[in-house]
Image (cartoon, rainbow, N blue to C red):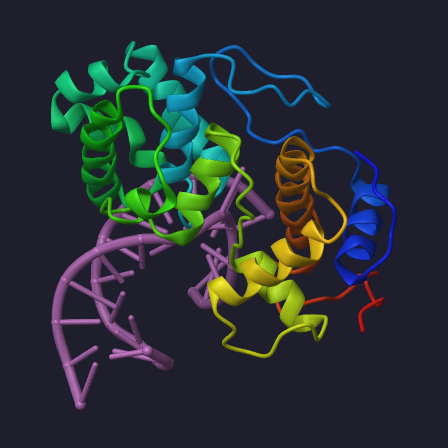
Length: 229
DNA sequence: AGCCAGGCTACCG
DNA sequence: CGGTAGCATGGC
């Protein structure tokens, strides 16, 4: 989705979108997805798969997560009920490629307990934050990608890039970055559905860009976003 | 061989 | 509060 540049944050978005194009974002094992379509998840199964992916991808590459999800799928265990009833060791070995498999196995089981109690209702951000294993980024990722709520996701890349560009100083807090990005974007976009799409694409674009230019030190080499304040 | 990956908790002062 | 060790595998 194109938007008109009128402030710093939009210029950032436009430069990234111009360069990398629509990212689509959340990749699925079940059902696939199409670029430029935003009516996902299309099923409860996809919704749960996003939540699972969010937990598994903590401090890991998504390609590792895909392996774990395929392992689970091959065992017929890509649903909350199946994971709940499978042996713990089987769960651990399935998600092994994503690292931290002991922690993540218990995080997943705790999330499932929480998820099933929701009974189809969308969780609040605060509720998610009270689930062990769900921090700020995971809560926002689940809300944004699984529940299509307008919650901007801030990850290590986002902070690193914005610090490098001089928007924030070292040690900036999650909340500060999130509030800034959201308030800037909301100045131009009022429609909730549009906001969700922008937030989804924006985070994906930042990751795409940061993988290229903000992965190894010194950060920002070859970054063309010299447009900031 | 070492550093990094789409973080979070627990525990420290 | 803020800071940090520990968690673990896989890719480059």
